[in-house]
Length: 126
Image 1 (cartoon, one colour):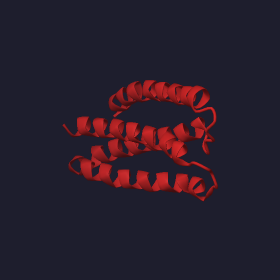
Image 2 (tube, rainbow, N blue to C red):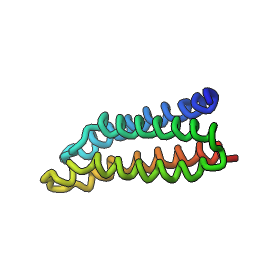
Image 3 (cartoon, helix red, strand yellow):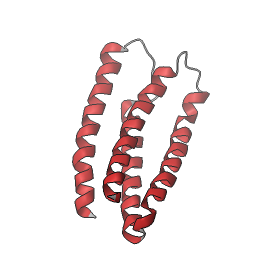
Image 4 (cartoon, one colour):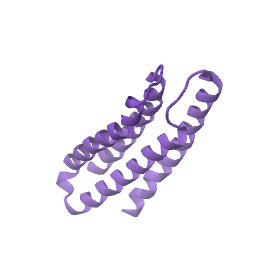
């Protein structure tokens, strides 16, 4: 389990650093007039924590019930979607002129991390 977790972190950390840097750049240099509801740190704290907890839970369950790993991933992905909606509720209730840039700044990393999780779960299933 430690080896799998270490290989996951070797990919997770650089991707997170690159994504944070890109998002800071876009928000500071390109979208200077746009009001973002969430800070970059809050978005990535949410994504990194959820991703780490989800992957550790999947590894733990894979150790006990390896034939159910795919179903566990699907279930946790559903819970992750629910957590994302709960995280975004204040944004939906806020009165921003244009909430779309904030939604994109949340969901682009969401799908990158979802792809990363799916890649490692598929690797685990092989």
